Length: 356
Length: 178
Image 1 (cartoon, helix red, strand yellow):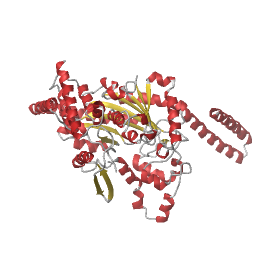
Image 2 (tube, one colour):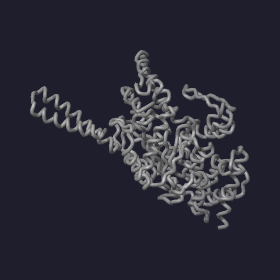
Image 3 (cartoon, chains in turn red, orange):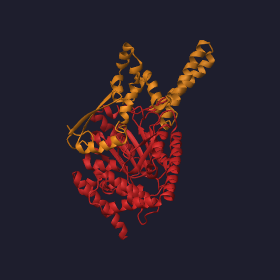
Image 4 (tube, one colour):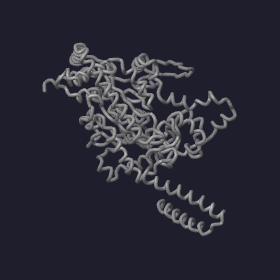
């Protein structure tokens, strides 16, 4: 297993798998923030301290019990190029924060890329588990297991009253962030999303774009996650999220049904146009590409278009991102070059399918 | 100066936004500004406010309410003895410097946690190994208080029993450490 694999494939092995509700739910994620006692948080690090923490985490990853969960590759971020870091962000394997402040950071990624352990991000350790579809409980189970194994060796900063102590007060307590990525194109099309988002935020959850904090909801992809980490148990937090997500899935399904029943021609037109543009465009920016891919994906899920699998669309959505595009091209590209390249990748991706 | 967003291209656009008397400066390259511009237009500018801006707003909440300056200055000057971070620095960055900051800033954290989480007391997972130690330490403290009570009430036989229990626990705790 070489490090190169992480940068060559747009779609992680884990994403090829099918999960429950995968027509609407792209992925489920659990992230645990943990810190070590007796070390300042990465914000106030010296190089000696960052190395000490990296060594401690490295040795806990090499434990037999961890090897049974997965085979991990440990990558110091300073060994990566700017583009490689971007690719890892686009594949959700590292956070933007780790990529930007990478001087002292490292990441351990499991072979199928469903588990990544970030070191010296905002917190010393961030354990992240990704699963396809709605499998938030399974993701928690694995993250919890890794956490328990780590704790046998590592002295965590934990306080009876405040729980796991984190660099940012928004993560203190359980240190958990559970999130689910949803493709809500029918709710966006019908405008219902504007009613749903404020409702979600009232029950202690937040809605963000695909690349986390401050990012736009490109391609009708929304990330819903818990906001509260202190005062609730992990199970309560996950159950709350799960319950709300299930309701949203119901709404999206109902909207899709209504769209098909009431405006079948318009939907066929929309999907057909998206397919046409994506199949023949020679120059396309990322926003338009994401919108059309979202339409196409909806068309596949509504069975208006046959012969293309939804996972191909997932793959294309990552492949056309800035970092991946340039990594694939083998170097930096300017805006126009990227738009041309993006159109080519999509065209080739779609046409290769039709021949099969 | 490089673009704040991509960190690659030079920042060519500089602008200041004021929302609710809060001033934020942006330095972006043309492309990122274009991308961001769409975002701002679409969402009334709220998305461009990162969560941390909102957070430091939360942390500074009491500045408006609390006009007692001497009290405020005293509070700002509190310093974490382990990492040296002051409370005022914490409020600015919204980040603690080390796990001991929680201890040194403790008297001022309750309202912050309540505002963020609506709760102040952890009720989730407890680490398996060090959690055992916490439990034993708690037990030790209760036993010590009991010992004092027994001595004051001159129940020496009972006190001796408790003393032995304390010794046993202390031995266990130091073993684990070694």
